[in-house]
Amino acid sequence: MSFKEDDLIFFDKGKIENPKFWFRLEGEPSFEGKNVLDVGCGFGSLCIDMASKKAKKVVGLDIHEYPLKFAHENLEKNFPQLTKNLEFQLGEVFNLPRNEFDIIVSKDTFEHILDLENVLHEMIKLLKPDGKIYIGCSQLYNSHFGDHGCLIKSFIPWAHLILPESFLLKRLNKRNNTKISSVKELGLNQMSLAEIRTLLFNCGMKVSLFKINASKNLVMKLFSLLRRIPFLEEFFSYNLYCIIEKDSK
Image (cartoon, rainbow, N blue to C red; front, side, top):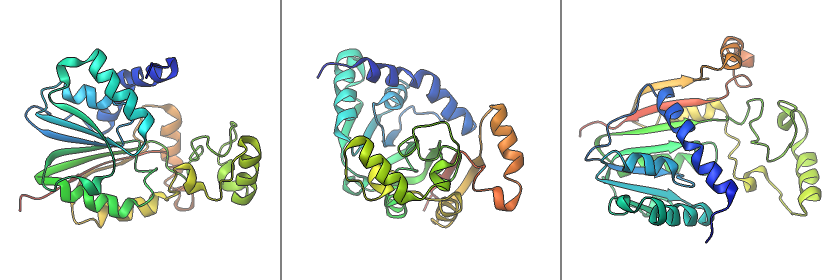
């Protein structure tokens, strides 16, 4: 597999995006001597970063074959010193050993996981006692561009909520010559902020951090004011960052 320029650009974005991720979670944890799982690792940028910080073991997990091929080849070619403590796996959390990880990370993945409730409960089972899960959702579905550009390739905010889904899917199929019958087939679970929040606060774990619109962006500061109006909360809540902790029992 030869690297595509777009893939390299996407991987290199991690140099900017990874620090932002940890900043929004109020600081990067220590990875030294820890077993770490990255759920939805994509091209592996965050995994490379964590493995380079003396983690005992880092597992990058994804259900998509293409980015994992890039991640594996990039690891072998450009980061051979990390091959002993970093591996990439194709699959789901249901196939991993329980009580294995000190830290689990999910960056920009929760909004895509279709069976999120069961996946979250399985992630909890994979944690060691006192383990933590660090979660970041960058585009909640009911926010202004919550369709991730999959449905409406335009700059019209909330168009994916305003226009009928049937119309959008018909338009999408005509444009791409596909037969998509559901937004979920595009890899979006369409979960609202309220649904994800309820899931997190009722998962049986301690929620030690929960932040909405975690960003220095001036637009996000405006959104944070507007979301205080109850009926606007869903539409002006763009991102979600959360830490949940397992007790020592």
